[in-house]
Length: 357
Image (cartoon, rainbow, N blue to C red; front, side, top):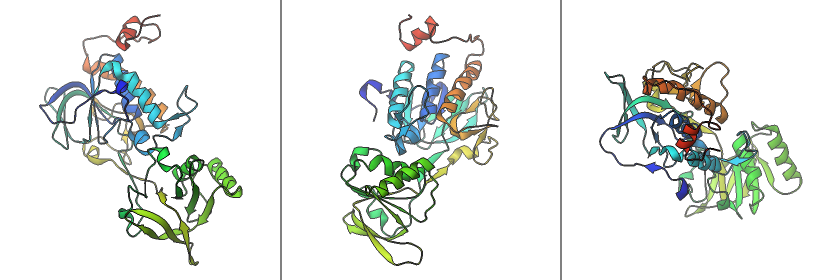
């Protein structure tokens, strides 16, 4: 959740068309940092996101899962990273428009863009920044009979509050990084931890697999081979599952909480219809400006592609900085942009509300 000290302006209503310098599509870490970089070059931004809060995938799918490759932070959770970014962009007063999806984009005769969301809000903007990650992420739901009756009560597709699972008899299903990561993160606080996977081989990081097997050998958790064939419980509360490995006999696994991690379905959505010369559901950009095939429309973060692209948050931060300098030429064509450092520029420090040293 956003702390009161970090709240930005949020608009969930539909009103008159909003005219602004830039619209950022996506409020994940890269979209949030784009607010900062645009703000440094005097570009006001509105941010649109289909979720009901900022943070994107980090805050929605693994808010308490540690991230280890953010510069200067040996370890930081998805929610902590989101909170820090919100604090960093506060001086620029972005306006967020949550629970909306940009459905339509068109070029206006004056060179600006008109964006329309699925609830009818219209934006008129000089620059569009697509920071939508890989699109909309939806957990893949397993085809277990009656699973919908347990969802949200004893079946969960993401861990948003780790403490919610303290003292639970947890069964995690899957063999990828998410499954193994949450086995290791939840095992210390669970009453019991069990992992079910259909085969001995895993898609997860070898170190995580080794740590899981060490816990099994130490008697601190169980690992079972097989797949779920039935769920047991009533009134939304699980009491256990039936599973089977191959053609072997069925067996029972007691649990009161089920976490199936079968991956995510990525949907690009209406962006695919905007004429951006997509390549395998990604948006090609240049590496000077991170501009798309349409001048004035930029793509940063996991949604773009270029030779040597690495899907890392830190890569998206770099892309946001170069994008902002290019966007300045579009938004302020009559102004010369002089490159400055925040450590030494009194004008930048004034924008950030900090005292010059």
